[in-house]
Amino acid sequence: MVIARTIEGLQEAKQKFSGSIGFVPTMGALHQGHLSLIQHARRENEHLIVSIFVNPTQFLEGEDLDSYPRKDEADIKICELAKVDILFMPSIDAMYETDELRIGAPAIRGYVLEGEKRPGHFDGMLQVVMKLLNLSGADNAYFGKKDAQQLALITQMVKNYFMDVNIVPCEIVRDERGLALSSRNVYLEGDEKERALCLSASLKKATQMVLAKELDAETIKKAMLEVLKDADQVEYIAIVNREFKALKKVEIGNTIILVAAWVGKPRLIDNLWI
Ligand code: PAF
Image (tube, rainbow, N blue to C red):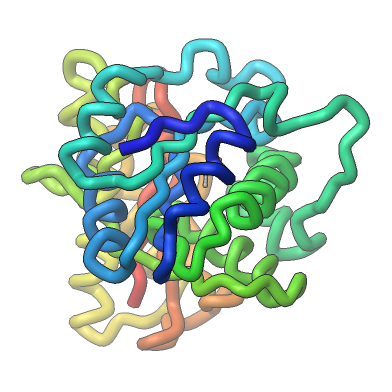
């Protein structure tokens, strides 16, 4: 495995490639969820690039940029074992200049739910993903469905900018009790680990209701809120179509149910694709 810390180092290592390139962008602190993306990409491509870059432009003022978990040594080992060909770990200076050209999230889809709670987050996320996709030269890039709105916006960016890369959505990975894996789960302390389970439990409740043919969005949201009482604060429960437009009734095959809530220090998100 080549560890490239500069753009030139990445370009040089890529010169040896002769077939399809799979790419998994991450912010490090790799867990089983990342590993499943990496393994998925490994299976489907001749060459595999993973990036680790804690992207400052997608953190808002007061968010956890400085304390975001960093585990470079363990991450390098994980990538080696997963047979990554190039691990790209650039510095902030390598990725950004001071007076940057900006791309922005779309005015509607980019500013609801996560975009409303974290205004500007998706602008920074799209900016870095555009750079990373261009640098990697990926044929296929792998993103988790857990960040459903991120995935939808990246797919839209690729379409709107006619980018020549295939975005591959990957299933959410959960621990044995149902908690969706996230690098921020390390912040959970004491009983918060138990209480955090209410997010996936609320989605399980929604599934049961849909299976019992209850499709009314308000009724489902009310029942989910009841299950979410173990969270410290529920930020939103949303039932939207794949375009992120709010739905009055669940449409089987075209619905995402999303939840965001604070449990102790971390703000957690989870969702269900129906
Ligand atoms: O999902 C993430 O880890 C980040 O948002 C991404 C896609 C690596 C961009 O910084």
